[in-house]
Length: 125
Figure (tube, helix red, strand yellow):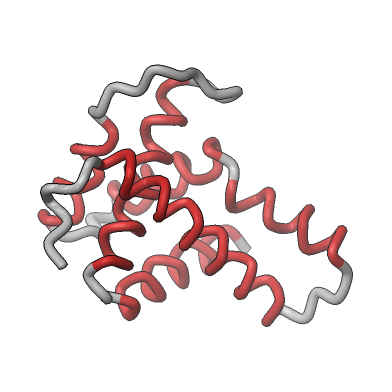
């Protein structure tokens, strides 16, 4: 499915769920057995601030393809009416990352999703 005609905020809406699911799966496979501990551990990954930080690191490492950078930028630059609890820059960056996950998911590129998640969790731990 071509995703370049889909509103980037819609891709981010989907990508947010994909990202959180992948992080939850990762944490469960780490052997964490209590829901409270899973929730606390997930906060290191799923907040807008954490997502923005990781996205900046991966961009600085030239980890993404040009096409992926275009998706991130398109979402980052999309105007949104509501404000979040976090600062605007972190929110825009996290939206870019989530949009990428949404796009990759709709394109059935699960391998790339796994590669990005592996890179994110490998560098936070």
